[in-house]
Image (cartoon, rainbow, N blue to C red; front, side, top):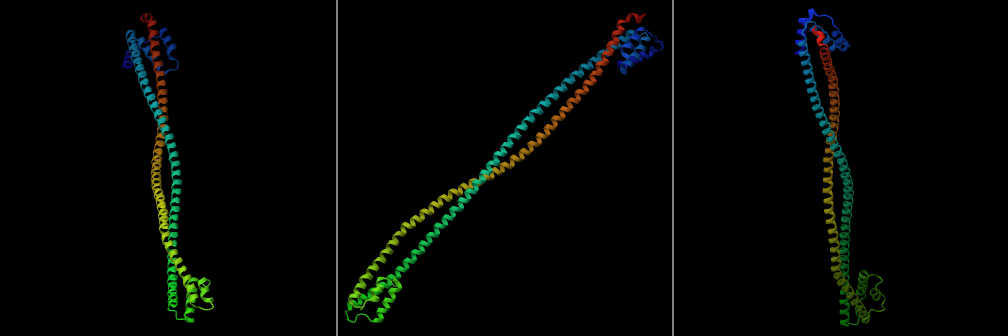
Length: 351
């Protein structure tokens, strides 16, 4: 507004413009190559030529004051915006440092979880192998017991069969001795006994040999055979009783082994369940942590980009401000110089 007023004033007085040493001094001080200064000199030449010196002083001073106010306001705005830039940069740097630290922490956590998964996997494999071994052990124990039972049943059955045969022969011999008929046993009956003894006791058994190779099968031979049969029967019965008696201890030992296997297997199954559960949890933790780390890395990259952009914006704004500030300072200096020259030559200009 002040510039327009000054221009109007100068246009009114330009018709009577005259050359003076003061104007020459202004040209020397201000004209040079600056367009603003050249225009200012031309306006002052026209204004001074019109004899409006007081008005020129007033307008120049107002222009100085207005431009000074603009410069001060611009400086305050610059300081405020630069402080805002600095605050944003500091906050972004703090955020970036925090994100970087969190990414590093997450990477360590991923490493720890991965190591834990590896350890749990190895443990799981080992526990499953132990379970397989203990199951095989139980199967072996049960198979052995089954074979023992079958062997016992076979022995007991064979013993009972032999016992029945011997008792039959014993009864027949006792009956023959008690009958005291003289002729004793028929040859066919004797051969049947020998055949039965060989079948049940074996061809080389003492009883079989006694019956087969006796020169005569008389009462004395029969009594010796009876005595031997009674010993064999007693031995067989004793063996049967002992085997039956031993079965209690064998069964207890079998049950003890099975119980031990069961306890170990239950413990291994619990360990396997715990290991499997822990492994699953760690695998879930790894997925969550990896997703979190991916997001953190993206946030870190975005923050880094924003920080760089903010720094560029700050530098660009500051550069533009300094360029404009330099121009405004130049304009202010020109106004002050013109005002000072006019005041220094005020008396000469009024003549």
